[in-house]
Length: 299
Image (tube, rainbow, N blue to C red):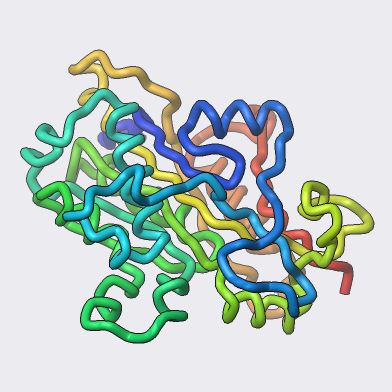
């Protein structure tokens, strides 16, 4: 990493089915609390899977003024805006400071688009507010930021890939501050019809709290959920110059798909090997692995 800026995380904003705000979210994780429950965002009574990770206590009117026209935003954009505010506040930076950052990188990951708006009759604004880059552009325009926005859509890895883009912007010296993360809200009738037809989702409707069990021998599928997670990345020098609290340092990353004809998980193994190699550490130095476990059944 000689000659490259060190990258640290100084702010965290999160909205999830098991907690709004990083403190509530972290507490629920430590307590092993599940946010899975019956679907309320649409009528799922005729579907095999009727459960999801909804942010049931999220009320847009609590966060947005009438002038901000929350009803015109896709739900994933609403979640992103709130997570952005939480992350900036947590970092100790101010909106005014961010307005003075030239070409502030805002890099967001989304797996799809505003599926809730797609389920409604078309309007004069839904063609714009329903596209994938609506989250990053709405953040920039709402707060008057002189930003360069980027939206990455790589399925389940979208948000992680967005973070790596932010990492590159700082480590290369292009910026000292980056807003990055992801937001998704795909709990809609169309999406669930697709998931049910693919037989990739759990049907443990009578016990939703135990439906998400990716490493259980008796797992019967995954559970879809909505949420947003945004972080503030800074160069270490910039963070130190303002005596910011630093959560951790991001050393490196690796990216790789499963090559054609390879065993399942080969890309995952390859990306982890690359990450360790690029970080310049030993495998024995790794203390924790956060696994991507969709919970698919045995085929």
